[in-house]
Image (cartoon, rainbow, N blue to C red; front, side, top):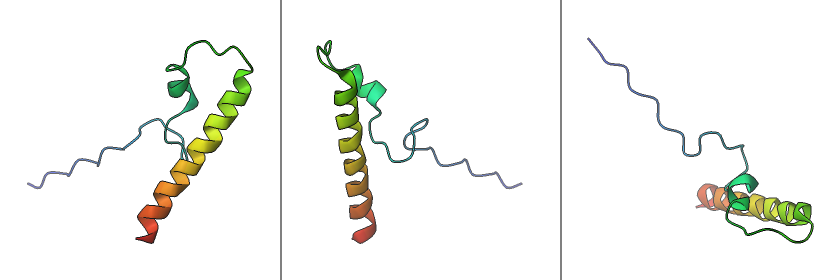
Length: 62
């Protein structure tokens, strides 16, 4: 009898497409943010999206 192959494990289970490191994970690494946390979060998420696009560009271009 043939055994069914196991499904390949997902690299980032539970992460949204287009995200390398979610803000919730990164936020835990910071001390208390004294200013507007929304600005820090928005900046993090924009840079994280650029990193994600860069990785995909490298994978698909070469």
